[in-house]
Image 1 (cartoon, rainbow, N blue to C red):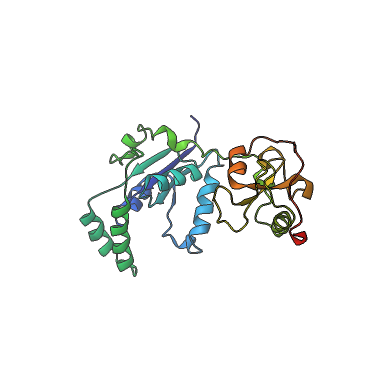
Image 2 (cartoon, rainbow, N blue to C red):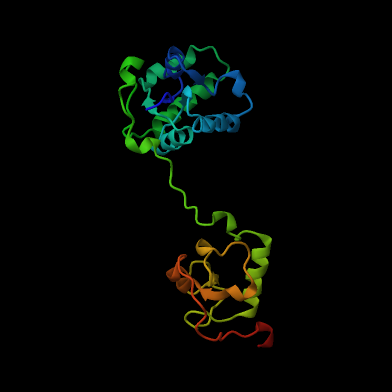
Length: 249
């Protein structure tokens, strides 16, 4: 293990996270510090940059009431250690009420919310009381593993663009039957109905169908055929379309 050390402390308001953080010989990232008055987004971006600093020596204070929230925070900052700081609710309320801050009511409300949401499914270790003991406690293995992202041509997905919507409407106007099962597609059916209308890519986006495809590479399909085919298999058209121009009917 190198010199990198990033500690994440999680707990409700008034738990004493700041006191613990400032007792450590590390750079403290505390959302309540004036330097982060620009907002949560700026603070979170600073934490994410820690992940790419090989010699980072820092401790970050976060709320993290749920396992999923803690996992996101630890993954984003690339934390090497993570601990929960959880005194009793009464202690938190007492500490929050004696900090002489203007947001006392907000702090009390956030404490109640934190305890209502709290779960411990991830097995995150509790703060043992000193850094001498804490540095020998390993966080759960899953904590430092980055979330796996599907990198299959996400940037080339055209859906949601105006050009794609125009092409989709063109397909709906020009075709009447599913190109896979050859049945008539009732275009008035609600989405997700097995026989509702969809536009099918002959070359799936996941296999390189980036951008808005040419008209000849998309066909009308019923929802069941489109979903059953999936995203990982390209198919040539094996039959002539039974579609007709709706204006000619």
